[in-house]
Image 1: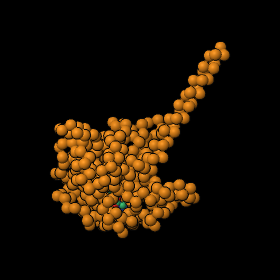
Image 2 (image 1 turned 90 degrees about the vertical axis):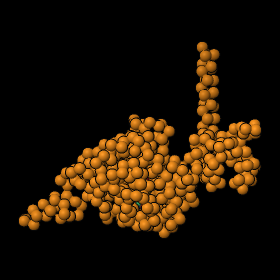
Image 3 (image 1 turned 90 degrees about the horizontal axis):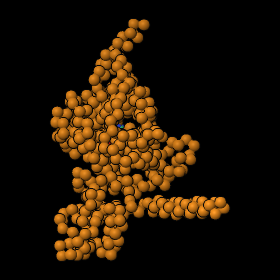
Image 4 (image 1 turned 45 degrees about the vertical axis):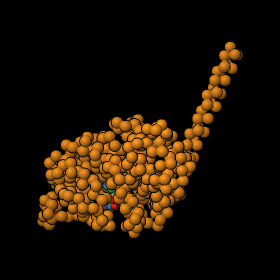
Length: 394
Ligand SMILES: C[S@@+](CC[C@H](N)C(=O)[O-])C[C@H]1O[C@@H](n2cnc3c(N)ncnc32)[C@H](O)[C@@H]1O
């Protein structure tokens, strides 16, 4: 009996030691977590993926270091680190020597490519964006929580900063265009029906217009209005079927059959989202207009983190994005289905549907409640006109 108890105690002790070793190994990963971002950034800047992509054959270390003008022993160590993470692969050349080739992951680091994610990584790893992370705990422990980590680091919010620094604005717009290529290709494949019968779309906070360019290419009957702040709209590249309009979405949203918002509402508080969505509701027809929103949806406790996502690997991205919103915006956040229902209802949308597609964002389609007056009296609106007449009588 005593022997058995000792055996059990020993097993428990061994389990505890094993758990503690595992915890330590995991903690080292967090301690040096930044190395992955930094080394991938270095690989993009060196152009390793771009050079390998141009060559069909495996490229030796010597060829690569000569072509990129790099120190070969350092390049070897960079490649060894990345290969360990599935970025690049070592294989044999025809002559039996060792050489490097691309992998699906390293192809995402090609600078100019429809599927490239390089621009996003360069933006998030820029000194400007990284600076906010140092102020996160100070922001959370401050009583009013009003000054964002970004503002504490730079003295202005992320949009004002971009307006004043065209180079950073370009970095931001390129990063957003990079995500737009991924998300819009998924929406075109997974739910093309949502664009049936839609002749005009206003993309609110549409960045450089990549979203509308891709939608108009796929659904050529659509006329696109790419709407963003003047410093963004004025430098957006020309695209067939798309006009760029610069203004402030808190003041005005151009009229269209449908309003589209991707990764815009998560930058703002509930109250600000309600203001933006109200402007969108007023910009679309009350009887058959729609607002289409692409945002990550955070799961409730008992749900998957991203509900219905086909790809479990994406589930954590929503939670990471929520932290990014905390670091980079004043009051932005990723929302649960309940939180989405609240802001949509408050903005005068009494019905909405959610479709999950194979990217980090889900598609929310919101339908305006009928018979809601505008936020400011608009005598062109039948309901405002009717209320105006009734009030005038009394
Ligand atoms: C996170 S980016 C998303 C860009 C684009 N929708 C995409 O997903 O590729 C947010 C966009 O909102 C724009 N924005 C911020 N404040 C705005 C305002 N008051 N009026 C119009 N656009 C605004 C920014 O300039 C930026 O292009």
